[in-house]
Image (cartoon, rainbow, N blue to C red):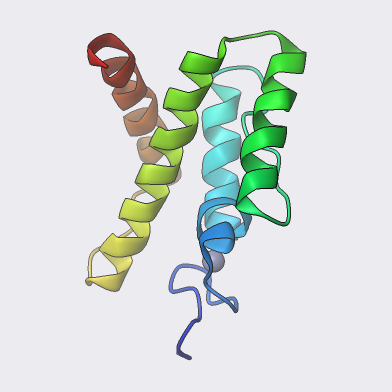
Length: 115
Ligand SMILES: [Zn+2]
């Protein structure tokens, strides 16, 4: 293991962009959560700002949800992908994808209800 290597996928280099959006594990999580909303929730790109702006523009163009709901989902996916990475770093096991997607969808409902 090299310093800076993604601990989840083993690919170089672990950046925020890789970890949250480009890592093969993260892309599958995004795909599974998107399937629950019948739209693409994330548009990968070369910078964090690009991903944020173009993901919202993609969702807006699909006309399936408002910005407040999308932001809750987007941030919740990022939070859980980060938590899974930390779980691996500290010796835990990564959650199975369906279980993680279900956890994210359930937590989004709570975030939207109480935030
Ligand atoms: Zn990775």
